[in-house]
Image 1: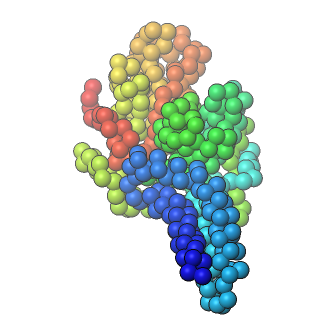
Image 2: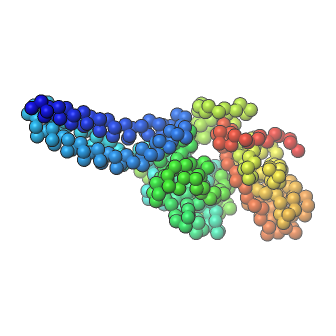
Length: 167
Length: 236
């Protein structure tokens, strides 16, 4: 009986450590890569690794956690222990979802359906507005700065040359 | 502005983060991270690779429209426009009042002085916009390359060119009272337009080679071009 109790404690501890680790690996790059904050080369490298692997790590953590929760749940008769198990799983589900999101595109929505107007139909730009211009093989394309300052980048093919316009 | 073909494959980019006030983009194909201002892959499988730069112009819409009546213009996304997320029309004036929070400040010029940054090889120089307005065409030598910087008729658009044609260095001056503007070179007396093309005279049909030129704030240009020099009005 004592043996079983000890194993349940280890299972609880493992569950908490796994959940905290998953939260840390998802939250740390968000913290490091903040606007208006200085970044270091090492900080960027670590953030890249965490962003790269967190979608897999969180799923692994989720599978192990479900097994642990199932095991603890089946041997538990106290309702508050069961409630705690569910509450512990919620942040893990949240970071598993977040690790697959690009929150920078929440701030600056990408142009999904890129569309162009002919020069003379472009009534959404004033003559005094600045535009970024790429010209190639006789084709010339203007990217209004006002739009680029928000989207920051858009893909295009100008005169047969595949480019990304950035600002 | 960058070419997206890398090792024979076209990459597709998304905004992925920020590194010291300059954004990082991520390509869907390999997941590598690229620094926008340098075009270099800083993390991931393609780390160390360099995108090929695409020389662009920064012009007023009115000037570009005259040069390219047959062009096309990127449209705003209607939902984003309706939500009011795009910058207001007067955002450039507002930006001038935003305080600067960069650590590597060089106060030779006021941080938000508007400059045109030009790079030739490893040499980079900041040309204060006011100096270009006063002196256009600005004749200079940058990293042993003779260059000319020209202000458009709108007094806002700027282009920079090499001023060596077929191994011959040219001295340009503005043709008085010409609208649209015309440059004349002292060596052959040919006439040149704002696109850098000779339209009359012995050089007729020749095209000046365009240079990388960026409209920027002084503090930003200095941050990413630490070895930049500053053009002094009346150097010549």
